[in-house]
Image 1: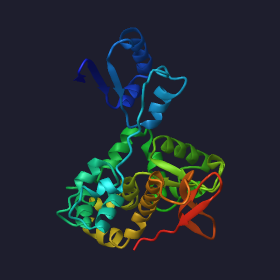
Image 2: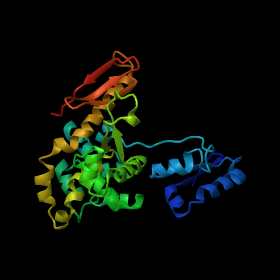
Image 3: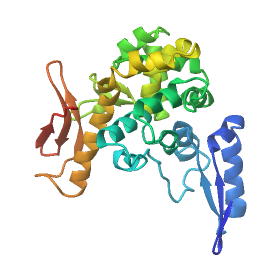
Image 4: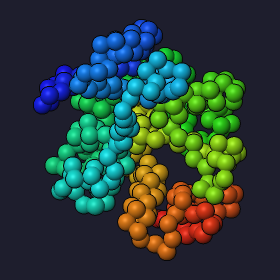
Length: 312
């Protein structure tokens, strides 16, 4: 709660937790707003990390609070340029790799320090089960957000290990048939934990059969590839061995998706600045069985320009 000149600001953080405990909360708040607060100078801010629930219980047409908001904002993780500022002593390559590992969440970024190299940070803060402040962070987060985490962890692990199609994910996760896994994938998409990417040229993305699933958050991608599958050995004190045998030889793999993301954002920033021969309608990737383009710009007139990116 805070006071602004002539205005009272009330912030309800993690509002979705209240809804989980009492489904009547939105209706109660609607009644109180309509009868007591509607014509006052009170600013009410509702925050939450479970985006799917916020959309369902607050933003959708049937929700009790529908039509009463004056604005909404989806807070995105920091991009590469902003994240790099956390590590001024690192080289550009090290800044990028740090962002590829922990992503753009300030809490994760602040855990690392440029007073030691990247791999020392990974060992100390992620792989070490005793001193690692980030070792169990994804597990605790997902256990709070998901009702049946045991059904979602194998799916996220499967995607992090390179299974991106529905049937591949279902087979690797070993938790049921494809329709069952598809329902879990839909929930993970609602929570903005994963995304379904299709080639940028697809005119009806939601109907495309060429979709690939990808974990959105960098740190979740890293954690489900290197920590969750190896938790048993890490609990036995194998942080150093895991770093040398699993993480150090594999930087191209854990950084590849982040590199493509940075490249697409670079092209998008250029488009916003008016650079390029045409204004793109969509910016994404493209692939088929024989070839792949990391960045593709396309507009309504079907003019295209592509860039093949490579990490060196």
